[in-house]
Image 1 (cartoon, rainbow, N blue to C red):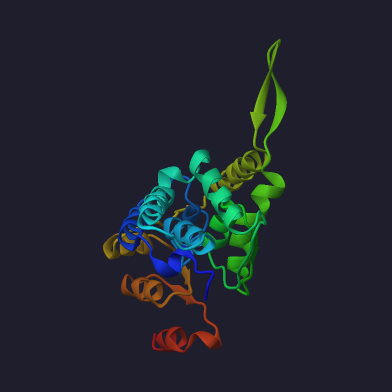
Image 2: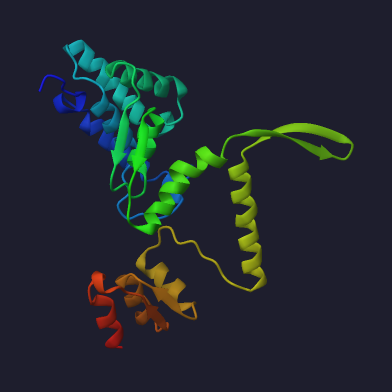
Length: 250
């Protein structure tokens, strides 16, 4: 094959892996906080591998070293919105493909890391999924920000003073309705807990203070039964018989 890509010849695997591992501890501004997805790919590796797959293989050791260092910098979380680096990556991809924006398809896009990074690199991006949860995550990650998240200027009046302010309509709507849901939940005296990372004993403590647990994961049902909390197990015949077998035994 004459038209070899950079990733076919070499790739800074160690450095990009380090950045991918570091990304797991990042919460603020990361798409992983939008919704849990159990097979989410790191943005660092998705961005780096997409770029390396869309540019040609290096012709010299000097070119290889330059591209290697660029890929390492490109993969860093703090450079996700670095316009200088992103624009250079876009130019490199266009130049390598006769100035034509490439079409990238991820047929099983899951949490959306690969299509998001392909989109960031200026590609015409298509994402497919049959899981309805993943479809909603993809819409919120790829589609809605482009449709409804374009900044606009509004006039804000405070007393007799009127000032112009730039807002993101999508961000404002998410804040507005998120606060509404929280307010209504408090009216009904509903306790809301957003579970991120708890150890087993912390989870058991939370479950013991619940009136009932509704779960589809076997481990959550086991812990609820362990602390004596009534539970309802959800299952589908394609998921296997673990949940119904456990529930019938109790």
